[in-house]
Image (cartoon, rainbow, N blue to C red):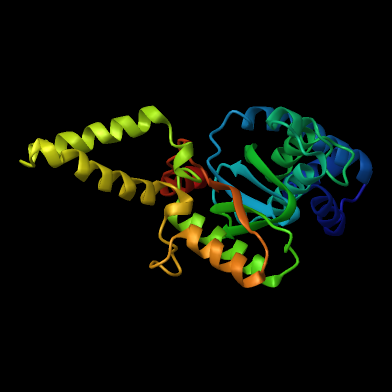
Length: 303
């Protein structure tokens, strides 16, 4: 059986496998395209199991906002080159859709959910992509925010490096000014990286630890003990202004706090607007990244 370049190209398009692997599979299958696909899948799945143990700290964060619901997800790969791979990008988009459709309670539920349009689960599609792309791929985490009435804005920064959701509860979700507010707030969260929505969320032990540090610094600087508490009160307010979203200076208008911006838009549209929640996912947070010596790798490949 003569294996033509056109046949190899067709098989490569179907599977994403390398040219030589496609040629070998077609030769083994005696030109039967479907049998060659099965051969590559079997070999690919075997290879995928080995690849699944490798460090994956690159990849993409993607999301989708809208009225009532918004989702954001992080999918990791081994190298930043894969983030530019169309198959990988499509896989990430599919994961986002799976989160939207299935509303999974946790990662295990997401991996067991249907992956859109394939007849496979998300976990099975992940394994399929490992075999096709040739790197370890890992659906790491996701968030899904809902509002009873309102808008969940989504903003993705840096070509998938940071993904943000901002949930606004309001009966004026159709108003374009609400969409603009959501977008601007999501950009703010991406830039300012708040730790909490409001001061009520700050843990008591964390606040007491900060106060202790403030007190020691004030006393060490020679401030009289009778005014230290007053100094700490001002510093605590500044501390909340750094870590709490509603109390942060708005990045677009630093003279206004985020809470004031929300109130101003509510007045403008003539309807209540409440910033209910936010999520910020940064690619690779907390993961140990692989350090590659690409010069040595290329040299090794040419020997």
